[in-house]
Length: 317
Image (cartoon, rainbow, N blue to C red; front, side, top):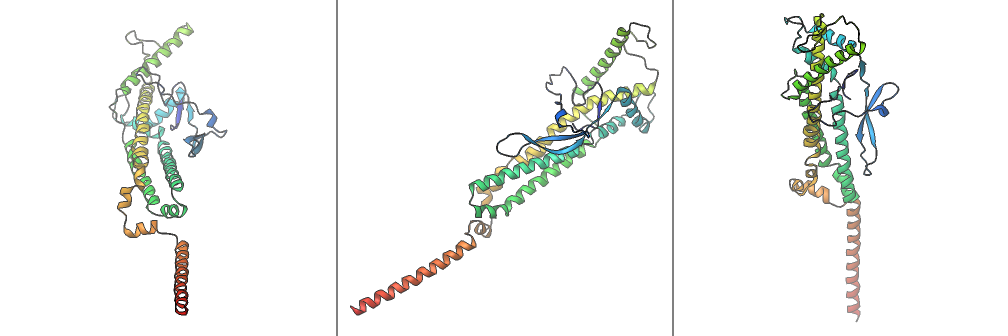
């Protein structure tokens, strides 16, 4: 859930469609919603057991708007973006204003998710090195280029995420055919719902329908504009959400954090190190070196004493 508003009777995250998009609905997060209305994002657990998960960031629960409240929200933006368009139409820039407000949480969610994945990668690399390397070598590795490389990968991922967020802040644009299909379907569903209500009441209706398309003739042109704009927002939001949820994992996490993780410490990487860096990494600890020098000195003294003693024995014999 990254949207600011939830509209009654509509799924912001997905539309029941015939485009073969199965499983597009976001599962309910009732168990993660606190009494204060906060929603906690779910992230994988970093331990090796793979059990459970952690709640990393809290978001406010989306505000639920009824149909009339949603139209009032759209109308506020409609008035602010009104230009020279004819009555019953809306400024094309209106969809951008609505979309930016509706998706204002995306940046925080993506940023925290990237940080979580970076921590998982760091824990994995450090755990692997700790398992395979002697303790003294691991301590020197942790403070060397390994951590610097991991920080650099996070920095590159944040730069890539900033570019994706910048694209979101541009005025809406899509080449996905689903957008037009979704708009047509939403309008058709709205018309069918109104027609069903009329039939169910089986009484005289003050509103009337044309036989050409069964669409209710709206005398309030602002309501007509707001209704069309809301349909466009529904359709575009899902298209943009799919694109965003594809781009962030692939272009941010996979490209910059996960891919080439093995190259952080590989034979090719070590071959580019200087002799001083290799010596610092592979050399014995200072305490071991001092102990070795002390024992070598004692050994030399004993060998010299043995030679003197053997010389004295030969001379006396």
